[in-house]
Image (tube, rainbow, N blue to C red; front, top):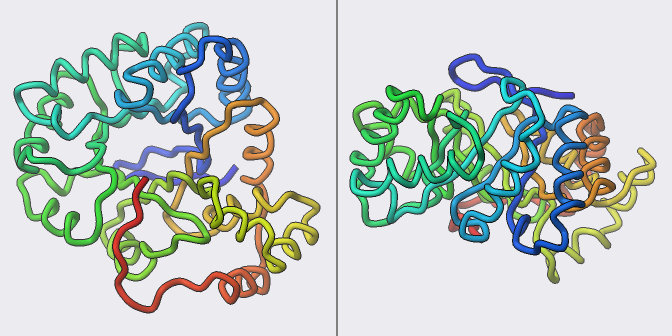
Length: 283
């Protein structure tokens, strides 16, 4: 599988497992647990979650799923609410996430989105969590170019390891200025919702003649084309959500698809990147 190197040299798989909405329905616990374990056993060792997801239910599910697995082979990511990202709450929030996950440390801890807590305070707290051994590295989510420029001017801001933003073929705003900026800084982008959310945009993507052509070229599904497109971008890795083993199998297969220059050109023509600054997409 394609891999990505973090700024500290750590190598991680280019496809991980997202967990938004997982763990909220107890009747699905067995199948969701099997899905996460299958993913880990087949190379998708990065698991992304957050204290927001099901008010901790997703973290608890992940903790249950990974209990019999080798922790040293996993890359666990969680996210802190913006109102918990200051000195008053972040240390308790982090510990609560660790307890729900059943682990002593997070490989990556993200500020979920910006709030009223000053960035400088959040960064200082993240560095303290690193010093305590509670987290190995930290990053941010739902940050645009101006947010990153502000962050990198702060003391220790250069230690930001990852930016997690919405990115898929139908939402390419980050390509205009943020992604080139991150390339120059050596910071990878973690793409959430790389398969697009349900709705008219997703249907437009999946019914596109260009996507259908690429899918037929590789004998894969249009959904897998969406993931292959994201993974074709330099410095980008993805965390598609999968609630069934068949879904995570498809994601794993897409990680090995190499799109040709002609196929990428076809997709670019059908769904071009913006030629001007657009607001950052968030869900």
